[in-house]
Length: 57
Length: 242
Image (cartoon, rainbow over all chains, first blue to last red; front, side, top):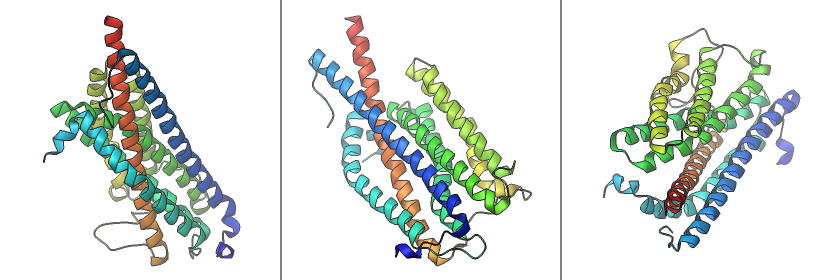
């Protein structure tokens, strides 16, 4: 089915739209996960230091 | 059973963790299916050629750009009226997701507009209101970062959200209010069944579903991070005072 792709003279237009959108989505996912892990690690450290139990799952 | 019980951060964390375990794979399947179907298995359109494939990105991102702000509006109103911290944090968490979707819609729209309209940009009512909405997203996020006290930040950003809602609504209905713009009328309406041929309709619906699930996943993940960050800040403050 790959042969069915018919981008024609708009090849660059379509590919650049998909590339731009996917880059933005990927960046959002990466920033979300990186910040999430950093905050979780810092919270774990502080809770361990203060001898508190995690109250969440 | 009351929705307000989820204002309890512990219960929110527990419930959202369970939802995420199901929703992440569902999101991946829907987005990959919708975008792959749209990109690889749809024919070129008679007038627009292969640029019609941009619809599978442009429409879902534009819909989410507007509706993310409306979700923030609801969360902000809950904060202002009932003072539930989770709702304020959910609004804060949704802003970068909505901003990304709005920017994606602006970029894909510009790329699509160049061959179809002969220009990347026009001061068309819908495009302009969408750009202003994006600027509101930036202002909203900057305001959260600029104020140290979280309750004050939540108050002020909630008010900003109320003001920005005008542009969120305007972005949606600008094509109905003014006729002089380049942008076409809505492709998808509740009143009429569809303006889109079946060949594009089904992958578009799957793509919209995938982006909607993606939005929920991102907001839940980011809200969980905000709740942890709030607890971290409280524990550090207590540590300093001890």
